[in-house]
Length: 367
Image 1 (cartoon, one colour):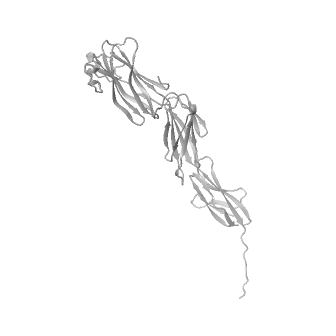
Image 2 (cartoon, one colour):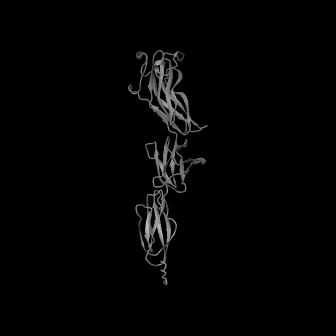
Image 3 (cartoon, helix red, strand yellow):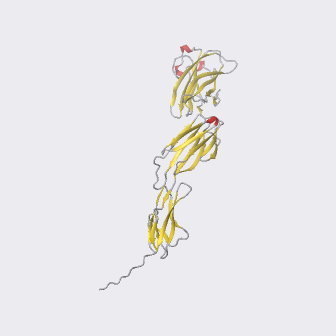
């Protein structure tokens, strides 16, 4: 049995649960072949990009007759269907008076990072019919003599893994992503080290197969000018995921058959540019023209020791008007602040050097 998982889907005995098909109802009783369920023994190894599982049927034969038994099923991964009405002839079996038969059906292989889903699986058998006389079709009606089928609930193999979802946000004014790369590293037991890089479109990537019961740490390398604004964890299990905060990431302990999705949301940080320093005569006014990107709000303010009046300038929120005091030569520090997705406001400064008005020159001109 696999070290990772064995899924057993038990079969109900209620007549209405499964579709039953047969050619002669009087010649095929409901308990001739008792389907207990199906088992998937999953390999935990990723070999040449694929993981595998062996499918077994758990069967009890209750009649004296020989049976030709077959199994039909569909199989899917997260991305595609890999088996469509797959027909497997198991062979002839006699009455079993002791233990159940655990009959090998098939080996399934699929990409390492994907989950496996087995659906529409059923068995059929022909009473008193040797397999050599049985038609090679996939459905009960293809059987000669009497036959019937039982259908199981869907089965799935969730390969333990961590799915990283990347969300890139540029929600505010004058904001773009350009050609930024977002790098993720994941480390774990026995020297496990892996990673992936996203572009401005974001997306997702699944690190799998990983080992159930082990702890892995996912960390984002935050690009310059960006902020990690949120991280959330979700799981396919009924219980909450074991997901603990780390620096720019999460530490995750995987349960059996658990697939944890960690969503990282990055936003571009706000920037503020107050512009060049200015020289202004005392008593004059100057228009301050700021520039900002990725901002939510912007605003001008002045140092507490500065005199004069600072007011907004028209409808452009980036601009302001500063009227200097009427006399004196001083330097005044003005602050231009931008708020946005990142928690630390971006503040740029401008120095306004105030100089005295030059004295008026009076000349007497002789007529």
